[in-house]
Length: 90
Image 1 (cartoon, rainbow, N blue to C red):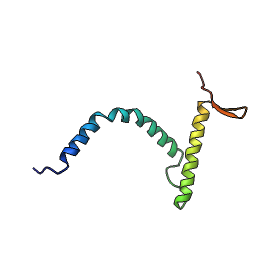
Image 2: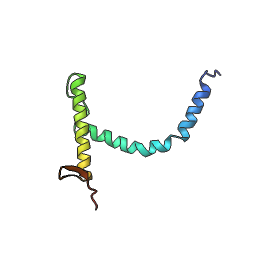
Image 3: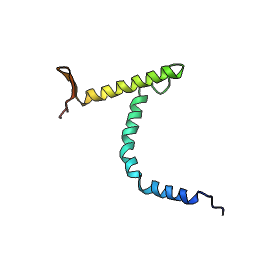
Image 4: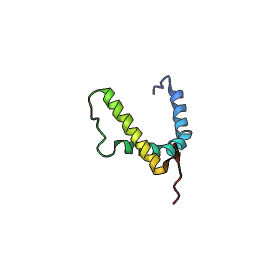
């Protein structure tokens, strides 16, 4: 059996992955997956334009629109020239 030079480092990384970061991963993964799902929903899985600049602009506008929609759903309001998020109670 051949033991590679980085065997101890890899074993330590595997142990850390199995113990330390899985709680954080389980905590944040659903929110990230939801954001990605919103981003690619309704036929937005493919790029529409040629060139990176146009697609970069499109992606930033899409993300801004989704963020604005999320804020409106959370209760974004414009009153007396001030934007506020008013929590909606059920």
